[in-house]
Amino acid sequence: MAAPRPASNVFTFRDARAVPDPVHEPPLLDGPAVLVLDNGSFQLRAGWAGAGPKMQLRSVVARSRGGPRSLSRVGNDIPSLEPLRWLLRTPFDKNLPVNLELQELLCDHVFQRLGVTSQGCVDHPIVFTEAPCTPLHVRQMVSELLFECYRVPKVSFGIDGLYSFYHNKKEALPASAIVVSSGYHCTHILPVVNGRFDGKNCRRINIGGFHSVTYLHRLLQLKYPGHLQAITLSRMEEILHEHCYVPDDYMEELMKWRCPDYYEENVHKMQLPFSSKLLSSAVPSEEKQERRQQQLRRLQELNARRREEKLQQDQERLERLLYVQELLEDGHVEQFHKALVELNMDSAEELQSYIHKLSVAVEQGRQRVLGDSIDSKPQTPETEEMEAMSELEPLDSEEHMETDKPTPSVQPMFNIAEYHQMYLGTERIRVPEVLFQPSLFGEDQAGLAETMQYVLDRYPQEVQQELVQNVFLTGGNVMYPGIKARMENELLQMRPFGSTFHVSLASHPILDSWHGASEWALQNLETDEGWITRKEYEEMGGEYLKEHLASNRYTAIRLPKPAPRSAAPANSQETENIPQSNPGAAPS
Image (cartoon, rainbow, N blue to C red; front, side):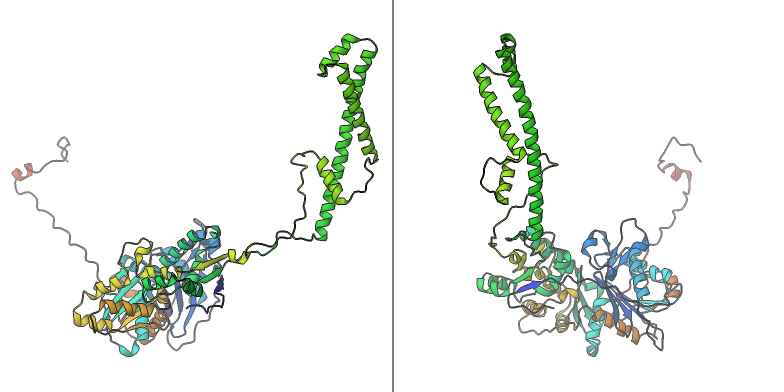
C-alpha cells in the first residue's frame, strides 16, 4: 500500500482520473449466470460469478437537485470528483442504503455495463452484500427494488466481511473467529462461533476511512492555510492510502518523531502543483520593446497636445493683461484699477512682472510647438521618455496606461517549489490512530481494541481462547502498513499471561468479499439454501431472509396482538359511571 520512497522524500500527487466503464459481454456459461454485487458505501464492485469483478466504481451519483434523471452521471463516468463535489449524492447513510432512487441509478449503470441483455427484467440470480445486523426496513427496500423493479428470479443476501473470511479460510471451515471488518464509514467486530455468525454479540464502531480522510483534511488545512484550495478530499484519500502507517506503539512512535534526525529521515514532502513562469525578465523581448515604443509615442502625442492647449491659454491671458496695461497708458485710471481688482493684483508693477513672465512662457511654448529645441544636447529614448513622463500631468482613468519599467534580475531568496510542499510528519500516524483512539478528533466512543475486549468478555474463557486463535482483518480501512503487528500488540496486552492468539490479514482486503460471494454463489446455485425466490418474497415480505453460512440472522417482525374489545356494560348503573367527554353533546 505504501509507495516507494524517493531519496529526497518528495512525492507528487497522481491526481488519477476515473475512466468510464466499457460495456462487457456476458459470459458464456453452461448454467444460469449469477450477478455478484458487493454494495459498499465507498465502492461498488460487480461482476459475473466465476469471471472476476469487472467493475469497481465509487458509490456516488452527480446529480443536480431537481435535475432530470438522464443528466445524472454515475461512478467512473465522473472523471474527477472535486469539480462536482457539491453535486455528489450517495444512496448510503453511513453503511446502509436508504435512498432507493440513487441505488436504482447505480444498479442501472452496473447492469447496463455488464451487458445484461434480458428485456424488461434482469433474468439472473443476484448475490447482494449487506451490512451486519441490517435493519429490516432497509432489506425490505432493497428486496423491493430487485424484485419489483428488475424482476430478478432469486436473491441472496450476505455480509461482506464474512464472505471475505470464508474466502481466506476455506480449509479451516467450520471455524470460530473474530472478524474485524473496517470500511468507509463503520468498523464491525463480528464473532463467528463454530462457523456461524453470532449477531447478538457483534459490535459496531462508527469510525472508518471517511473519518480518517476528514481528520487529515482538517489537520493539513490548519497547518497550511495558504494552500486551502489545493488540499482536496481526493488528495487526502491518496495520502491516506499511500503514506500513512500504524505503529506498534503510538506514544513510543511519537517520541521518535521528536528527534530531528528521525524526522528528516521519515518525513514525506507532498509537492503541490505550481507554476514556475517568471513574472519578469531582465532582458526585454522584441515584443516588449515594441510595446514600450508605442507607449512612448502616445505619451509624446499627449504632451504635444497639452502644450498646444497650454500655449493657447497663455496667449489669451497675455492678450488680456496687455489690454489692461493699455488702459493705464491711455489714461483710463478708474477702469484700470477695476481690472486690477478682477485680476487679484495690487499694483501696476505686479502686472508688469506677470506680463514679462507670461511672455517668456508663451515664447518657450511656441518654440516647443514649432520643434525648436531650447536644449541643444541630444536626448536618448530613455531621457525622452523620462521627460515626457515628468511633463505629463495626471491623466484621467480612461487615458492612464501602465508603463513597463525595466526590472533588474533579482535571484529569489527561496525555492518556489519548496513553498508549495506539505510536510507529512506525525500526521502519518495520527490519522490511522483514530481507529484505536476516536477521541483524537472528538468522537466519544470506544476504540477497536477496547471494543474487541468488550466482545470477548461476553463469552466464557474457553470460547475466548478459541476466538482469539483466529483474528481476521478485512476491509479497505485495514490496508495500513503495520496494522497486523499493532493488533498483535493490543491482544498481547489484553489477553492473560501465557495465552496464545493469531492475527491474519485478508489476501486482498477490498476484493476478497466479492470473491467469497462469487464462490458461495457457484457452490450453492442449485440448492435452496440462502436463496429467496420471487414467490417467497411475495409470501413472506421484503424483509424476509434465508440464512446461510455468511448471512445475517433472520428475526421476524413480531407485531403485538390486538387487545380484545371490551364487553358492553351489563346494566345501566355501569353505564352511568362511564365518564363523558362532552356532557353537552346530543346523544347519537
